[in-house]
Length: 132
Length: 136
Image (tube, rainbow over all chains, first blue to last red; front, side, top):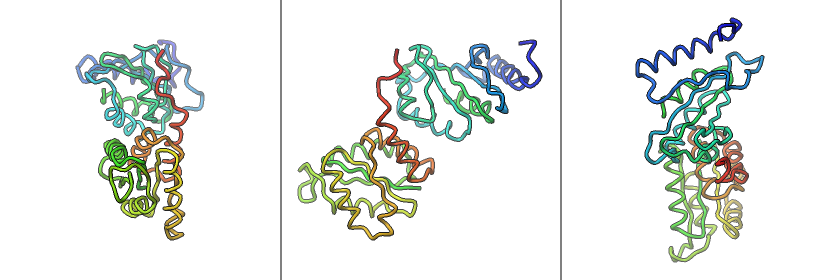
């Protein structure tokens, strides 16, 4: 991490921002995910890929109506945004699709890894993590 | 913002699917239903005039997407479109999407302000999106 070239600083800063929020209790159950687990960002993207792990708190799990709100929020961003259900070891799905999102079959307590890449990836992750 | 019409042999099914779709869309999207036969609401079947009324109920210049259950509901919907004036018919589309999944997806994307062809494309993508995928 210390040897990252300067153009990756935005991601480092965003992780630090996440840590700060986490420590100050602003982030709910979201926690930042180490960038090492993410694929390398494309050379032409303005920001590196962003990622966060969130925990489902709703006793009914991630259902149609909460999924609707996730899709609506995700659709406001240009970034490609995916989610994988870590608790089911699922592959990542496109969360701009309600049918793919509910394929995650996310129950209360399940951990989802949200990942975004594209020019507004950081803002997308910030907006989405507040929904969980 | 486009309108949606739910077509089913069963008035109860049409009402239930409309309820689901309305929950996904909020208040801004016009969603109407045409289920059962006109003379007897309990009788199963589809009726072109009922579908025509449902189209007129949600008509808007952005277009109307029709979602049907199976079989003759498609024929009845085709006949309903033939009864429309040409300039309205051009802005109506029969969707190949499955009824329940298609209505949910179409309602959500219609509420995002997407155009008719885009809403239909994402609804028809439901044909290749299995329920049980990705749960290893």
